[in-house]
Amino acid sequence: MATSPTANIDRRELLPLLFPDQADWLFVSGLAGASKDAAALTKDGANIYTMAGAMGAAVSIGLGMALSAPDRKIAAINGDGEMLMGIGSLITVASEAPQNLTIVCLDNSMHGETGGQKGHTAATANLEAIARGAGITSAMTISEPDQIADAAKFIAEAPGPRFLLARILPTAPSAFKRDLDMAACRVRFKQGLAAGG
Amino acid sequence: MADDHPHAEWSGVMFDLMRDAGVKLFAHVPDAGNDRLIALAEEHNDTRTVLLTTEEEGVGICAGADLVGERAVLCMQSSGLGNCPNYLSLAKGAHFPLLMMISMRGDYGEQNPWQYPMAGAVESLLESMGVLIFKVESRDDLEKAITAAISASGKGAQSAAIVLSQKFLGAKGF
Image (cartoon, rainbow over all chains, first blue to last red; front, side, top):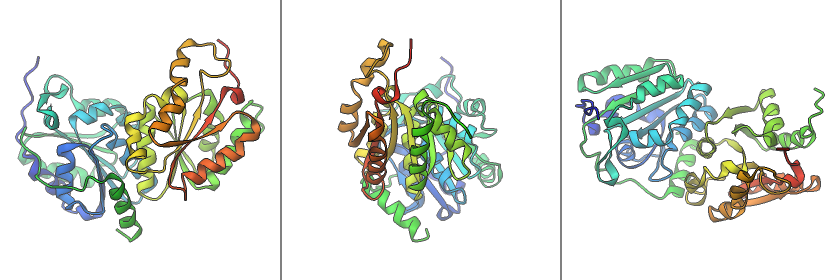
């Protein structure tokens, strides 16, 4: 087994640096740490739909949003385990090529929510290479704090769809308590958008 | 366009009803049963097709469309429903009003034994994940089933599946 890739990014500091204009975005986020970090970013506002189940679905939901609201900036935030579970969705994203979709994968090379079991990306799987192989040409990996500014520029300026792989430290996600009422959060999101959010 | 495909007439009816109801995205895994419907959605300027790698992606895409106030439909063969249950948490738990079009394999006249196991689980799976079933077993059922499913997944705020039997579609030779 290959040694785990190096990563020195603290996940709790990453998303605010990538999305300084978070209020202008619509977010969907997957399970566990990815949603805790994303909810901390938006203060669990009406512009995010976080999940704690349906593992693998975040990118597909983001694609549905991006194709249906082409004038809005959409970001799907997930982790490495769920990105792998829904890996085919990268192929569908590449084929549809929505200019307004950004995917951020927080890769800690483990299943953090279930006990920190080692994941495939701790070995040889490389999600940026997979994204490129799927046909997403705007793809980037960062693993050091001094690369974050370039990643923010990538999100702001690279042609969509964009795939950012952030290799992060195996440390705890943001300690943000988000609303887990999945039906109420759907209504909140839709009402926020209808109100001009 | 003259279309002598055996599914052309009813597919046109289905497409018009869905388009009139505001369905914009037609997410699908290709099947003989949805071939003409998807061809129509590709031809029209106000609808778009999305080719999926696996059916559960379509559940996510339909949910994403709903979040931003648009409507989508997931078109798939009955076997593909078997890939979807965990994603259908979005229907049962989060009350996303998903619309599906399921073309059956493994009911009437099926010659491929691999199709029967999943076919037999379609109705119980849909029911257990909170999706209403509107069956089409003859041409007479078509408009009523489509209209009911569109209403249920529109103002009715329910998830709904139009299930097209092989009694209606015809069975493929093997």
